[in-house]
Length: 339
Ligand code: ADP
Ligand code: MG
Image (cartoon, rainbow, N blue to C red; front, side):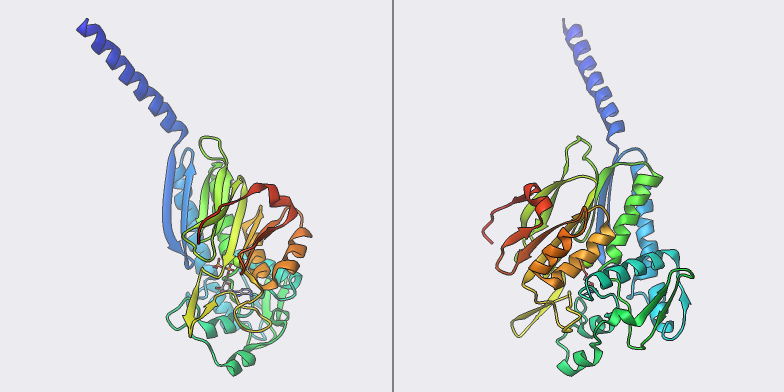
């Protein structure tokens, strides 16, 4: 009898062992977190070769950082900023793609998104230890309306030329979106993996579904207390990108100065919105639009986003009203909390 019982026990253990192994093969999972391009990037993906795929995706992010970070002295963008005044400079395919997108959104939003306000961004230095409220005259000196018009982009030769020596490009509002798209490309196209999630400091990409076939749940932070989530949406094969006044800021004399500047005034955008979320397919588009809508304010943003196919927006006003475009209404679940 004892023998039979122990045989059954061994059989059960073996069966559990087998099914776990099978399950493991179907659910090979790899997670990684690293700080790249000024943001914490974390990812979890499921599938065969998930470790190689995610590591290569992170390498791609580092490669792009070396092209697009103005914080790196000899990055391609830093070299371009130093040499392109009155001079046609040939740029890499990666940089050209992002610059063309940046120009497109600068024009589309009539300069609410403006990738050429690097001088202003340096002056405020928000997010660094030198952050301070600049003198009003300093801001006015740098404020040149429609600054992006002072850049010429030549699509045939892939060259860029600055028409004014004050122009300085900053890709902080769009490069992270590009990095997210490129990381996804490595994972999906090169490694044929179609389940995972990437988060680049508020830029989320949901790849396929979870390994249990359910949708990903993406949270939108409460902008007043970003350790809480204020709304969620279920997501698959799309990106959810949020710009908020809580990401990078400093407080001086009781005033909060955040990192999204209104290129019209030279001061942190004060449009009545404190959080803007864009939901669409490509993260580079979502990134540019989340920054632009933050500057544009509720009415213009809703109108703009409604006019673009397959793009939705969720906007939170300073009075904590949550508003959104028509196509996402039934997907957003608002979470009540006491903050
Ligand atoms: P985050 O980087 O926190 O996700 P955003 O995508 O909105 O937020 O980008 C903000 C960054 O973009 C700023 O830190 C600055 O480098 C740059 N930036 C600020 N204001 C603008 C603007 N109006 N147009 C384009 N870039 C901007
Ligand atoms: Mg952005």
